[in-house]
Image (cartoon, rainbow, N blue to C red):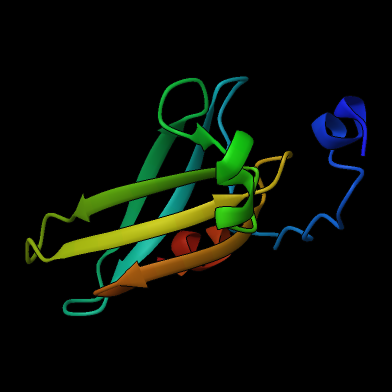
Length: 114
């Protein structure tokens, strides 16, 4: 497979992003939302695409389904429970996979419902 095919992701099927989990904030930021499993608090998390999201390159491309990923520890204001979030994003910054300990990833609509 040629260099350009690998670069453009044409060599393997790209996973489809799950809609509704990401809200864009300008050109270089996005929001995701988590909910604490202990107290139910809904917590917004702002991510900078230029510094916080890591790009999978070289040998790391086979370690996960996303082109970008972030690992984040989130703490709310109510109970101070540590929520460990690992989120995978495609090239459009849509969520393709996630794992959240002590909580769950929620959609923008769930967050906005109060």
